[in-house]
Image (cartoon, rainbow, N blue to C red; front, side, top):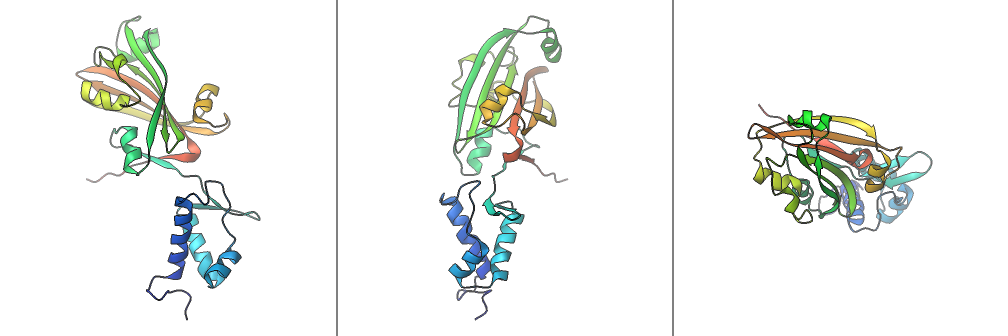
Length: 240
């Protein structure tokens, strides 16, 4: 029998892919774990090396697996996505993937605007601002440190929010309806405090998104979001 097709007409290479994906989803092999060798899979499924190689090669191209020359094939670290063309709550992004979101509030304070911060908000120096630092988790993995400054004129009740149950974005979209936004993205090494919150080494690069939002003709918030580069990516699409 041709080992490319099963009796139910499902290609065997696809059946091998499905098996590997199911074992990863079940936690049999976690990120960084080595999977069985191609020879072991050949023996397990009774197929040719070429069939197994196709399954492994396709999962590698899909970034589910990663190959290390002379070492084996491993479960790749998952890259979580954020969309750029819409401003969404990270909690919604995570839940849309069928994953669990939670957050940890690291800092929440009232401060007086420095000269630089006042200029960015177009406010007089010393004007009150709200400041929060929150770590967001996806399935228990830290994927974002959100360092946010908020204009009390736009969101007077910011300090009273329970950020374990509502994200700053969710609150601000209600309190200060979005009028416009600007953003920039760059790759930076994380300072020690950010690296500790993301559970990464300071030598690992981060994707850093800085965003300014406006509401009612005022700058409503300035936020810097740090993401571990090895487990995060930004994505988007545009149709005219």
